[in-house]
Length: 178
Image 1 (cartoon, rainbow, N blue to C red):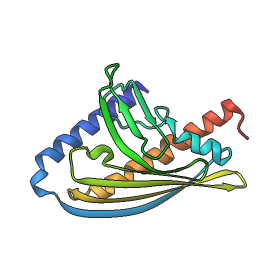
Image 2 (cartoon, rainbow, N blue to C red):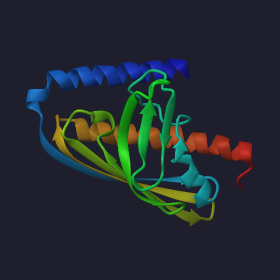
Image 3 (cartoon, rainbow, N blue to C red):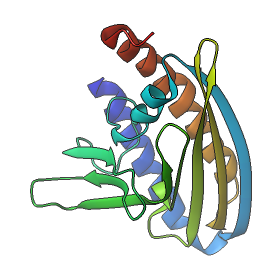
């Protein structure tokens, strides 16, 4: 796990450095995509996976070992990465809609802190025969370099299909959520 976090940290640092060099080339762009994934357990279980402590599956951070990585799922709350005991850190996004087990919407720059970029992402949950269906809708606009939209979608695919789904399956087995 440590080597994955180290690799991700290095990738984020590299992308940030490339973005800084290419700042003069940035234009105003927009993107939209929707991803769907089946998760075990009911919609309350699925909603809990994307709120509270998300460090078990969210692996793109500004600090190599954040003290806390969590979503405070209430209007006015946010998605926070706390670096240290002094409370230093970053607000990746703010919560603009929260209805447990149904829908959670956040808006913010995510990894583009310091850029005039806004990403709005909505998790919607639906009961299905095998557990829950998670529908993630992502809309972004603002200052971006060429290729950023494709990169954002690739990162979200990583989060959902390579991180969240296996994490959910493991947690469900531990908690016997079926």
